[in-house]
Amino acid sequence: MPNENAALPSPILITGAGGFVGRNLVATLRALGCEDLLLFEKDDTLETLAGYCRRAAFVVHLAGINRPQDPGEFYRGNAGLTETMLQLLAEHGNRAPVAVTSSIQAALDNDYGKSKRMAEDAIFAHGKATGAPVYVFRMEGVFGKWCRPNYNSVVATFCHNIARGLPIEVRDPAYELPLVYIDDVVQCLLDVMRHGSARMDEEGFCRIHPVHRVTLGQLAETLQGFARARGGDAAKAQGAGGLPTLAVPNLAADSFEKKLYSTYLSYLPEDSFAYDLNMHCDARGSFTEFLRTPERGQVSVNISRPGIVKGNHWHHTKNEKFLVVRGEGVIRFRRIDSDQVIEYRVSGDKLQVVDIPCGYTHNIENVGDGDLVTVMWANEAFDPDRPDTFALPV
Image (cartoon, rainbow, N blue to C red):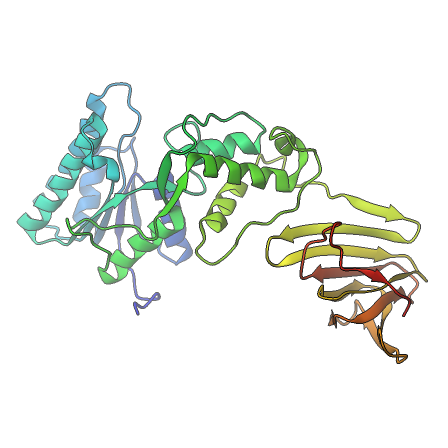
């Protein structure tokens, strides 16, 4: 297994450092302690690039043109800049490894695809001529934080608009998108920097892994679900009420939904990070659901006034965990076929989880002078049609 702590080359030349992939790569490298970075951006001079090409121990070529006014800019910004950079490396006798990000559109017969293919060919030719290791990544559409909306990424555009309650256009819901996540792109680049290792296809192109495939309709529906989970104006724009559904998506380690959810949150307006919850209040205190998951149950916050007893019910299959975070309380249990009462004293001064087993009627009493605040987890989200909750005094 590759050593994730292996030393990185230094210095590292990164062209297009201010772009989407560049910003994420630079942030990661700096977080890893790499400060000797030669960052080349579109307003820098060729003299600057020449100096960088003389010094670089590794080159990551990210610069390119996506949406020009003149199609000729594709060739100047993609193929032309690549050829210039490679010529400067050769002039300085620098055989540093070169990694370049290309696109699966390089296989298409349009100006963008042709220009990317010309850049790929130049990189491969440079490797053969100089012996420098070269890595050409043909990438699917990249999504993640800091991608520019309303430009060339449907994910960024959908995230931006849905988070603001703006309309989106889904021309063909069945159209399938192959996507790769920005953190996976950065990790694959780190792998070639550290170990010279990459997944190659039969044509010799490096591939980002994993690739996630989703239709436009699925993408829109999933993002709209994220908006409904938070409630507010963004949820109303999706035809939902203002109250949040509190739904948290599938957060399995490498799931598409986990990555998309992180991406969506990065597009929230800065005045909309917070959202209100629906507090159920009465003279006894309050009960407020915090979040719901499809397979991991729900989390709620219960507040009880001094002297108040809540609960006095039992469950067949539903089970819970109680965590008192403030105040003093007593949790009592009685198995429904027994007269024996079991007591657990709980306090916010000593955080302790108390499991609520099935088949035991239970309650919680505030025996302190202030509010008793309890975080409650249930293994299933509450379903009013199947509550699995039966009243019975302890």
